[in-house]
Image 1 (cartoon, rainbow, N blue to C red):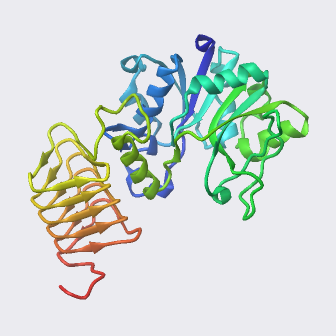
Image 2 (image 1 turned 60 degrees about the horizontal axis):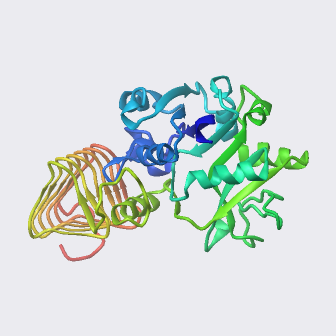
Image 3 (image 1 turned 90 degrees about the vertical axis):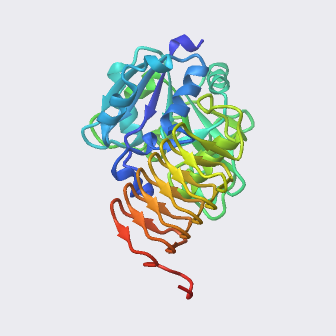
Length: 357
């Protein structure tokens, strides 16, 4: 079944919510549990038996080809299709139309971490004989998402924008199965939203859009908070990925990292290649990129420390993003959504929340 399926991964976004990390790399290429985030998704696609993959690129498009080449290292055949101007989800899907050879096209948003078996979504599409199938996940609080009600047979009945009183807890998980001819109907050469324009238009025409609904692991990795939690979930085995080294545990220390014996690494912490962690440092749910340094006695919680950045001794870093090459001086305190731009240097005790020095 899967040999007649092509996959399209949309990776054109600028990742503005993850700045400053995405100033130097596209969001799908940020290291997540020891490998670029996109590798986890590509590995799941390969595991499902799909080998023909298109990458819809735009922002820093060249970075993807430099890293993955023709895809053979992952057992894939990769084709890159670049948008010269951002076209939105619908426009991005339409933009690859001339490269489609399969009748069934599986589309992924490149910033979603998921645990659903892709083969199950394809099976739903085939059995329902739908023109488009959407993967929906059930969430505890759907108010932050657009919701998608379905009828008793699993057909999609509406697309609702974010609302304070959602009629269903089923939300759009960012994975779609399209019949190729439907993609050909999307307007070409302009920005199109698949959620606001394509799907409502198909429903208005009475076309068959079906839902594959489950409660599998799912996380949009677009914010620092979600990025940190998704990375930790991969390390701890809560989020499944063929690309994560087993066995899972409280931390993942990559080759060439130097971690002091008295340092504490918990909560799904990742320490990147060549990074240095000093004595008595405490890292809880931290993502430490390659080449970064955390000095003695520093505490880093639920935070990202960029490439070659440095956290000084006895600093407290909580719910913070530190850009590449930045230096945070000893005894600084950075809390509650702070973002330090690349190359910035904060002097010793330069930013504090508490009154003692």
